[in-house]
Each structure stands twice: as structure tokens, then as C-alpha cells.
Length: 228
Image (cartoon, rainbow, N blue to C red):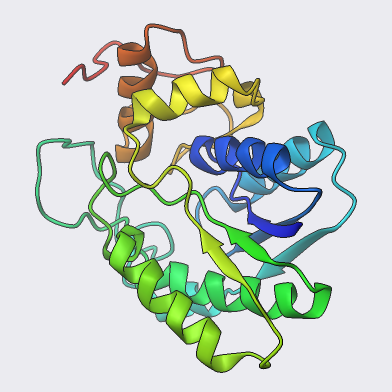
């Protein structure tokens, strides 16, 4: 089986890549930039992970129109990435409106051209920031769109292997599969040392803490690692 793997360069996509590599005969890695603050650093992580798995088929696409549209602190200079609040039940301003819909559409196009049978996405619903396009029902709906909008003989399955896992379980899965977590990058703010205080850093640090292992990437501040 051949699969497209959406690889942002973050921990979740790194572990998803490890799962896909184990389950599939061939994998092609897709990286999509959208004008985010850490675009260059995430691209480096993508290429480092792809090099680790010796992936030849890789595609790097820019959808900078999302930055022009704005509405997210990751792309809009008039907004700022706030400090993590893991107890909040509201959608944070780091949400990029319908980003995953844009990405899945590109992945489906490439999958149809390559004749790939699956698209792997490292979406996480349970232990995430509450983004609406990370929910299982979103991927179920998009699966129906792919089925309806591709050639009759095309069969592309969206696979979200970690969607029901907590960050701690994702860390453990990554270690089990020897995923190169040290090559991944999750910080929303920094390109050098991860800030340790944004939403993504806080979730990642909590996951490593609860898994009982140390995060291998450098942090500027992790003195207040959330534990619950």
C-alpha cells in the first residue's frame, strides 16, 4: 500500500509518520506551509524527519492565502500567540480557520495522481486545543467528500491513527516505534529554542511529563510544566 503522510514537523505528525512507515509499503511525505510564524523551522523538521525515513517522494507546498485571510495569531501580525491555558474550553486564537480542510484537499489531489491508497493525518481530538478541524466527525465528512469528488476507481482512505490518544500516549507510541522525536518541532513562537509556554509547547511538555520521559528538544522556559 502507498500512502501520503501529512508531516508538519510537529510531534504528532512525526509519530503518525512512524506509524505509516510501519503499516505501508511506500510513503510520500507532504508538507504544507501557510505563512505561520515558525514556517522555516517547521520545514526543517519536515525534511529532517523525511531524511530519517529516507523518503524520496516529498512535496512542499505553500498555501499563503491563509496568511492573507488572517484570523489566527499564527499568521496575523495584529494578533499575538498567548500563554497556554490548558483548562480553557474556548478555541484559542492559534486556530487557523479551516486549515486542515485546505491541507486534506491538497493531499487528496496528490494521492489521486500517485495512486496512493491512504492519507495519514496526525490529528488529535482528545488532548488538543479544541480545534474544530481536529474532530473525528470532520474527517468522516471529508472522507465522504473525497469519495464523491474523485474518479470512480479512486480509493483514498483518510487515516487518523492517533486521533483518540492523549499526548502522553502519543509520546509512548513514538518511543515504541523509535520515532525521531528529537527532530520534531512543535513551538508556535520560536525558531531556535522552543518557548515552553505557548499552547503547543505546554501540551507537548505535559505529554512527556506524564509519559515519564524527558523531551529531547531544547526549551527556553519549561519551569512551569503543566501536569494535569
